[in-house]
Image (cartoon, rainbow over all chains, first blue to last red):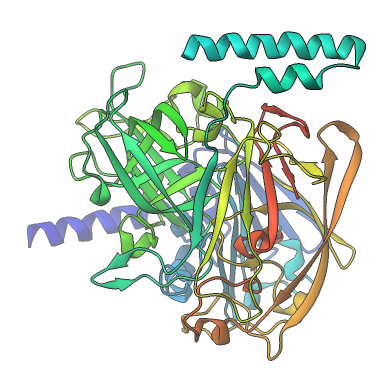
Length: 148
Length: 414
């Protein structure tokens, strides 16, 4: 019982730390990602959206694509290790995991192409890359190709 | 005997130098001075994998081999079958549940046991201590090689930097193998980045009893591609697998032959080398579009490329065993171009046309076969040339900074 309470408390604490989830979350969640990933961040304006680039000294680069309404509609990553996808995919993480094939039929690449959620993870030791986006949140006139 | 071999090698070098000088009379001298070759041919097989509860795992397109590991410098050894041969990672990793030898933990500069984390793009990971063992394949020995023991019970738990958001693949049924033989283009799994005191990636951890945290580890103490540490035949290797019918084969036997141009059985025979970039990637061009982060990976059990919109191939049903693979109504043929610099002449680009087919994965999986040359699925922004690429081909892999007749690694040649 005590153990269960502790787990619940630590889950709440983790939720408080991460703030809003990244993908599908508010722009403020990008800052919590920056804190979580212990990285520096710059904002690049694009036509119809903004990109927050979070780069870590070990070479991990995360891009978060934010609409003018302040919603994160896409994320991408590239680096020597995988980012914590539970942090980066936020509330979509459970759907991502549930959509993966029964282990281990497909190896070394994860792809989820659901109606709304798309996650694509590829690469190998020393060089990982991937992206995720929500079709329903793409700003008007912006296509999924921008999430790279 | 060893000294005799060394002397013979010196004579050979002198004779070769002399031959460069006059270019006329090398052949008769060489035949008398070549040292006896080491057996460099390691059998490999695509089959249904290790058995769990009396049933083989039954995955498709996984390449396996049997290795021998020993307590360093002793004859206390164990053979481990169904090690997955993986050119997409580096290092020997053995599931603790399959290990009977007692091997000593390696320590970092502070005397702490070293933990190693490997992640894969399918979001799985393996965690465990670095130990040293002699690793033997064919007649070749990698002495006192740092290897990983995956998930032993007597080692601190995996730190969040390794596991967060990931899925463990640390049992035979979850991994579909008894371990991984990581033999990619790199010498180490991480290299100089993990030896740096400044922001090493979360791959090596110092593990005092209080818990593990990211640490820097010298390049020599990192997990190694065993091939480059062999005393000979150490500049790379080739994998040769015979062709299969379009319906596949129940199993497929082939060879992993160590060395490139070091013995009569591993010459390039006209194979064209393409260097990879610093990340182990090269460019695949498809329909005029360049995918510059493409790679060859025997540990990927399919040709993973594009998506259904760009390939025209139907995805297999969600929630089915074949989700993530392609399930076209009829087998579809494609051509792509792989290209990279010639390692012997960096200004020259070497290109190869690659013809391949994709069949319906549900149909393939609905047979007793395990080896397919036409299994594929979607991928993100890169071509992942998995095991089907190796079937019906001889593929050479040149290890980074190792020299060969094709030039300096890292490269692929086929």
